[in-house]
Length: 311
Image 1 (cartoon, rainbow, N blue to C red):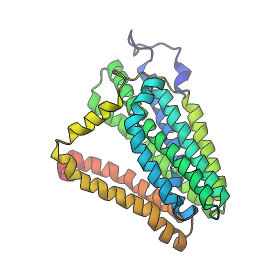
Image 2 (tube, rainbow, N blue to C red):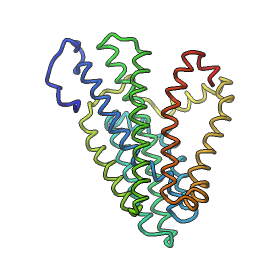
Image 3 (tube, rainbow, N blue to C red):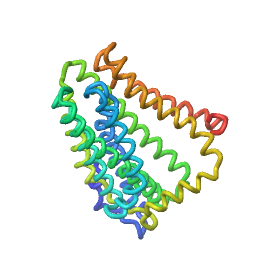
Image 4 (cartoon, helix red, strand yellow):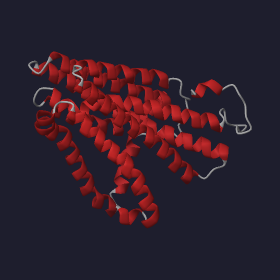
């Protein structure tokens, strides 16, 4: 059920100062999570296969630009765009730029590996758009999630911690499910000899449809005063005093290097040549599926022994 379908009805769960009922907020969160996950899932597969499909160096440079501009966007664009467009508007902005990313990937694949400079220009520009999208989209998603928790907790007089855990689990299920499904779908279509350009265009269309349907989501207000990009730097600098940050940074660096190494070098030089072009998204789907399964396992272990021993 779309969240806008029941907006005219009234219920005892609606307080005098709330425009929506708790059931509407919960239903809307499912709608938001589903469409967000579909859009994110279908447009991020090029990140996995770009080094295998595009000319030498193009995929590596594009993926580097994507990550660089994600950081830049998160610091300088995320909060201002939320302040300017609101949570839903910033989400739509990010989803649109994600579609541009996969669309320009399709353009790069269309011109072929012999057109190295054109591929570089197309996928490079698309990766910049994808990075801008990621920084804004995840900032908006975090705000939308927090606003959802605030509204439901207030309407139901429920405990915020347990509610946050419950909604986080719901979002994670949609998110990982869409990621696994999209990569398996790409792998299956590739195995069926469907050209990468056609697959990319179809995925971009699905992402665009998800973005258009997202306009039906509730326009929840952002809590608190509009954030400034300087606040991000101050918050980051404040964490530098905590030694835990530096103790876990080695693990984060290792993970980042491993992910780039697997998605780039291993897929281009081993997985695709030896197993076939369908193998790269298939292996990425297994990684996401394993993450989804182990997240539940580690969650139960953390309850038993605590987070610190688990880390």
